[in-house]
Image 1 (tube, rainbow, N blue to C red):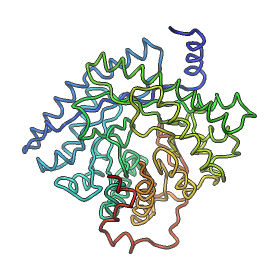
Image 2 (cartoon, rainbow, N blue to C red):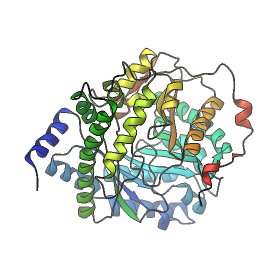
Image 3 (cartoon, rainbow, N blue to C red):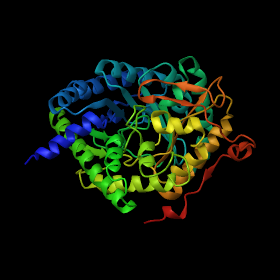
Amino acid sequence: MLNLNDIIETVNMIEQDNLDIRTVTMGISLLDCADADIDKSCKKIYDKIINKAGNLVKTVCEIETEYGIPIINKRISVTPISMLVGVSGGDPVKYAKTLQKAADDTGVNFIGGFSALVHKGFSAGDTELIKAIPRALAETSNICASVNIGSTKSGINMDAVKLMGEIVKESAELTKDKNCIGPAKLVVLCNAPEDNPFMAGAFHGVGEPDCVINVGVSGPGVVQSAIKKCPDGDMGEIAEIIKKTAFKITRMGQLVGNVASKRLGVPFGIVDLSLAPTPAVGDSVARILEEMGLEQCGIHGTTAALAMLNDAVKKGGVMASSSVGGLSGAFIPVSEDAGMIEAAREGTLTIQKLEAMTAVCSVGLDMIVLPGATPTEVISAVIADEAAIGMVNSKTTAVRVIPAIGKEVGEELNFGGLLGSGPVMEINIRKSPKKFIDRGGRIPAPMQSLKN
């Protein structure tokens, strides 16, 4: 039975605290679209996406209107395209342009899956796809790319790490006339989940069903507002508040997922519990940490506060959904979080502190603007460090950094919209990691991998 107080509370969370469903993402398997002829493969891909997702945006908008729940993004994730390149050969950018046409005709915000999984080595199609990423992102507008270069079970592919440093830089160069937007749509992962609904790391894993609906919730503003009502509570009380709030947020995501699944005739997959911030005032993960008592995000104590937040979000949300997956926790994308943008501008939040925070949050070094002259081997070393944190701790970590071509520390890069803006942050280039990166090979899996 519906409780009037619960209804009023939910309405207030939506109207006053920026509560929304951040994304409804349809995952589509393209394995049956593989063909030795790349043009035939592209046609099969387009036809299947239109068949499965042709009504996705319309249906989700109807749910949004009917239930009064803001649903910000409607997205698609597909099988890693490198698997199809391995069968067809040819120019992988053809696949990217096919996906772009499908995005245009379905009306979705993004399609993720211009991806390769190379954590244990390169198979047919992987290298070709990775080398095509800069062109693909420069010649499309709604396609996202990802590469998984490590895992707890396999270790870290250092040849891929080196290559991805070069790819990130090249992608920035090719889109420098568009505020270097290319790398903002590219993420390098360790322990990538197969059911992540959030971009840019979303792809449809080979273990997933033919088609599935996954939902990503949000709500940093709701959590901050709840904590604000308990100014003198101890950390145990704050954790309980976060858990209860996460439960309520996740129930809304579960509802939207169930309804979308039924109306589209597609199985419901998971709810991703992640608190995903935006540049809007009142929608910041950094502000939650400051509401706990930190004068500003980035000072000592930030990692501990974030660890508690992440844990409480998971504990509260997991009881509210039939299936939790994806990343689930708290995101710390610098340019997409008003509080983090401010802290980075003032120098309180540094890349070194962000790296420490990634050991306890949902993802990793996300949406960080680097000086345009940052050497590729330094970018590769950042990727290696972050992958090591994920590998040893059996968690997903990622790197999405944007070399701002032609800009230096203290200048700004503005993407607009959900991607926000941010200052160019200082990175340690006093000494070089080049020899380490050039060694290549594979860092072996840690002892934690031996769980059988």
